[in-house]
Length: 313
Image (cartoon, rainbow, N blue to C red; front, side, top):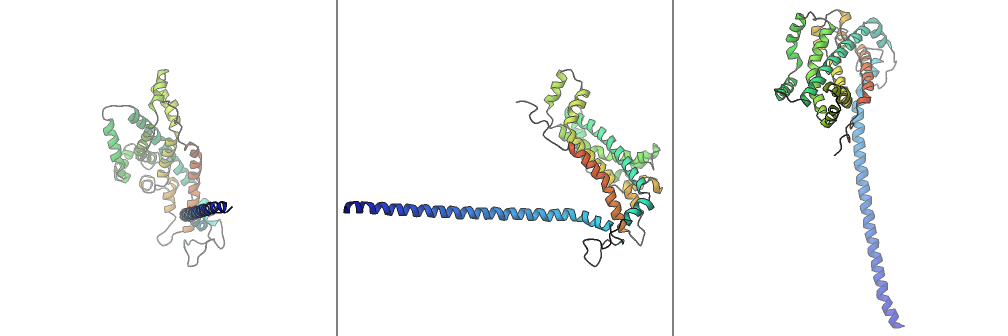
């Protein structure tokens, strides 16, 4: 009996020690897991705080312009903090749409920028395809020259542009302005679209040519649909570049008030001693509508990965 008691004592002590060690290990694991969760939550909270601040910085200018367009006075800032206009009104929009030829300015901008985008996109797409797929004498030099031209601002060529437009009797016209915009966008579009063409597997074109397709058929039926994201992005940037331009339109267009674009027309609203910020804000909101419509239309083309898995091996 006594021998059994002496034999059980070490076993109980060992069991107690093992249980204590396991308990301490579990406690340390729980503490480590709690610390890890706290660090993750703190990091996630900092990320959300940073994103919230960035969203405020991004959205507040838009909100500021909208509330200024609804303000009854023409002051952009005041001595009192007002996040909402005290007496919101649409008088600024009424003045811009009825008292000024704003519809003509908008139509002129759409015509000039749309025509420039179409011309530049056609030239840039064909040029980018030639630089991406064909090897000819001077191809590398042409690419280097395009990159070099991209570094120079377009305003340096304004006198050359004006001389050419005068020779063609297109000075003071929307067509002449569209040609100038297109000339400035061709370089950017060629470089941007060529980079996307380089990512499209050439085996797709080789397979089409084996089936008897010509270069033009391959370009139209295979390359252009696959390059839709690059074409849409390039077209959007080309259109925005002309839409926001002021100086070229000011120098080239006829000074007649009905033949101006939106930026030049809005410049005429101010005087030497007074700036109607309410009118400017209302016009800014209206000007953004065509851009939003264009972006929503082109958004369906902003997709990638169309060629992933199209070539086996």
